Image (cartoon, rainbow, N blue to C red; front, side):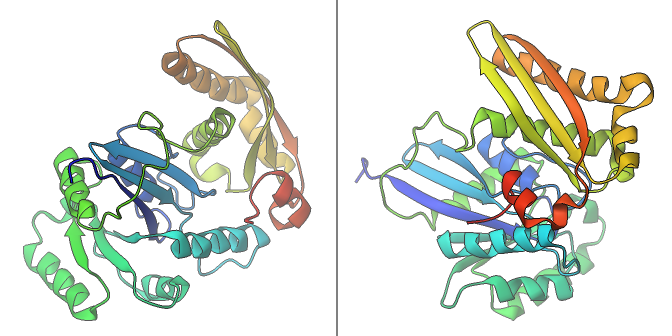
Amino acid sequence: MPGDQYTTVVAVIGRPNAGKSTLINSLVGQKVAITSRRPQTTRHRIHAIHSKENYQFIFIDTPGINQTSQSAFLQELNKTTRSVLSDADVVLFMLDGLTWDRTEEAIFKYFPPGEINCIAIVNKIDRFRQQHARVTAFLQKLQQQGRFTEIVPLSSRKPTDVSYLEKILRKYAVKGDFMFPVEQHTDQNMQFYVSELIREKILRRYNQEIPYSAAVVIDRYDESDRELRIKATIHVEQESHKQIIVGKGGLGIREVGKQVRQLLEKETGVHVDIRLWVKVSRSWSTNPKLLREFGYESS
């Protein structure tokens, strides 16, 4: 019937830096998850919502599964990914180009018992334009595994590829009323978005100088029709990391704040007053109490 609605939960899973967040942002049509060239950018289970016609897709952006580190922090990320799979109607298994090794094999250990619709996304395929024989051989090997209901080579930044994937997802849509209003694009609140935006600017600005042990906590968030006031603390584990972020004469931290302010003002249309502090919270990524306080421990 024309009036029927379809609501489908889609988990996006794969190794760190496979392009999961970029694909979700492209599918939704706006930024809901932070991106970086560095792996392990996503830390939280982020729900992105795309509603079109009588279809609503709820994409769950998961942290990239890490097989090497035993830190409490990365164990929590892996735990989050496990729980996501049990909630999904469809899984998009993201591959970083033509890469398949023990990491991808290990990811299947996270899948719950029973059958699940799993679509292999061979991302960044545009990098292999002149390697037709290699691409064909790789796709054939994936097909022979018998694990995937579909295999889709694409570039997550190419609109036509993303539209094609959306059409494929409709084949797996589950009949049911919409869970969110059609104008809503994420279930995360603005404070979470701001904290992730600050973290993204840090990752991009300092590249390899700052490890992933940088957490952002919003201490104050006041919003009115004319102004947005934000106070946030960036927690790092070492004094040297604090010095890098703050920069000479505070130049570094001011630049991060400026980039965040400019983007928020563009998005909200109001004046933004943002103030950032950097605090050394030693070994927070291995401290269960601080992990809970910073919002990283899964339920």
